Length: 473
Image (cartoon, rainbow, N blue to C red; front, side):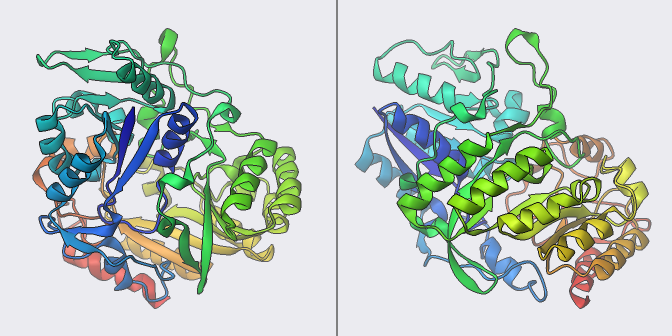
């Protein structure tokens, strides 16, 4: 039994696809052979993008969050032909991918001609199929989609394919039969005990994804998750939709976020450090600082004694104001930088449009506490929200000037499917309901995508100018 994974790295580069590494881990433990087709190393001649994301950001990095990016020499290929060649050489029994909404259509474009012709089942999971499964399953050439967590369903599917058994009843999976019938299975239970998850298979992923710069120094990265889920309901994030998924027994998703135990986090980190010798860690989840103080203190002690490398993580500003001692604990642990989602400097916009009623003064205090502890700060902003005026954006720029972060990133709002703000934008005709099917070359890194009426809103051209003003501070 052989499974060919696909990492469709359409515009990003330099990040290890943790979801594929975890899925590869559970198949590896189950005795299933795996291989990865990684588009990070190819530039598709059919792609509308003339440059990748790191090139786009490099033009905007003056004082910005981008600290440099290692890039492979990308071979210019016909991606459809390259993928076909891979399949002909490897002969997989199943092709599997995870996808965001931004990548979904282009993924199908280069994969399905080969999988359909060769009659190889093609499965796609990830955020897009989870939040809009009814739309996703109708796509030509998509045989199976996964909703929510995919570790258990994927392993069960691989085992049944190997044994030539019927697999149409596996929870979390929807199927399209050869006759065109769609089978929708219930959503099973998620991993309540995170320690039961398999360890990631880093051998599946090219070493390139573990070598990146951090603060002007080339580092060997370790990528880890300490938790899953999120308790918040920001309008521009899919968590609001994930919290409503009905699971086994009709139970609604509680919106809880689940942590690995401190012992398990450090055990996994030590295993990988002994095997791969990384000297810097990036946490891919945003919840580690939200741990109860007692757990964080325990984790910090174990980490410092057994791992002893610097790390980067992300967090909500509120946790360093409500519990300011967490900054000191993390500094002692070895935290070098924390990324904070600021988004907007206008309270009314945060409350009414972003569904993030963070009081004024919270960001300033969080940054103050982190810097006092000796931790650098990166801040993330989004501009181009509905109802956002130029005056509101200038309030964000003014907040940015006051807090004076070490690094920052400014992006344009792209309301993705499944988010509350997408529904708002579609309802008000700011974006087409089937936008991703119509437009293939729009990135929130390069250009605004919403058609917002001006006056009231700045024009798209003005938004681009305003983003540049962040650099002046």
